[in-house]
Length: 109
Image 1 (cartoon, rainbow, N blue to C red):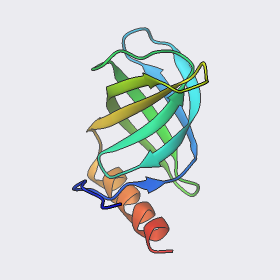
Image 2 (cartoon, rainbow, N blue to C red; image 1 turned 135 degrees about the vertical axis):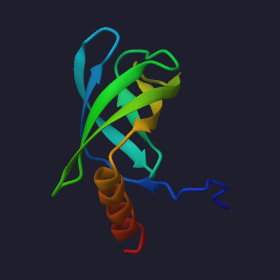
Image 3 (cartoon, one colour; image 1 turned 30 degrees about the horizontal axis):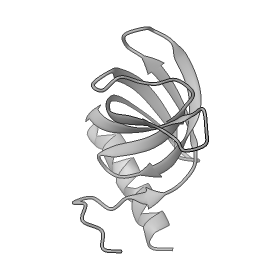
């Protein structure tokens, strides 16, 4: 399968802490994949498109903090959970570099 994305996406599972900026609710989840511009997570609740979240991504040796918006949210087949795509909207240059280095390491091994 040919990857048509501008940014490589790696399949990786790591813990993520999320806080909804609208409802102020916290939840913990895991990633399904990661790119330089977004992450796919699993959620127990439906998240509306364009909802804003503060997220903390644990990249094993570094914690990355950023703001993301919900790009899409779909119910998983035969499950009560949702796959949710988040697009990064506020990220520091240092944290962006950390994600880039992490993706390169995983992608090239």
